Length: 221
Image (cartoon, rainbow, N blue to C red; front, side, top):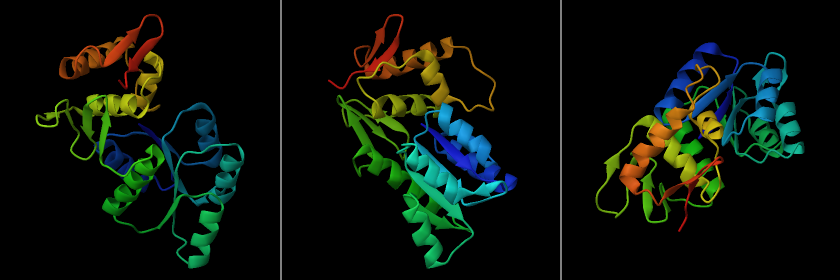
């Protein structure tokens, strides 16, 4: 699951990106509005964290523009402006949640998880598709509800993305795009095959199906 972090404070951006990656997310970072705009137009993000005070313009104007362009992903506004008027304005411009600096990372992660669960249409921290249960907090998977297997960070990101988008054909390039950030060196496309093979050994070959010449499908039934 890929996130966009728009934050001009380099130290804060680096720290927060590392925290999010430890939670199993892939994170692209932008420090300027023009870069954030370009990324939003070309990448597929599950959620954006947007600093309101940016050096090349207003984050609120960017937020309005994204909503006018039809971007419906959850957006968490992050800013030093802490008056109730600022919060109301941020929410009216299209933010789904609003946090002020300084903040506790644990609270930000909890709000982020809540936004993503709401976007997926549920409140449970366990995602269940075709008898496969994924605990998004512990990063463990089960096919019978009794025996749970730990996943590596990459296995978890791949499985979570597939389970959030069942019955869709996902190309290798799309899956790689969700697993790795733009700043990382491009991995070999066959790396997806390796991780799909690992997941199949845990879940069964029938769960993740191959569409020859197209990609992979996580079957919902």
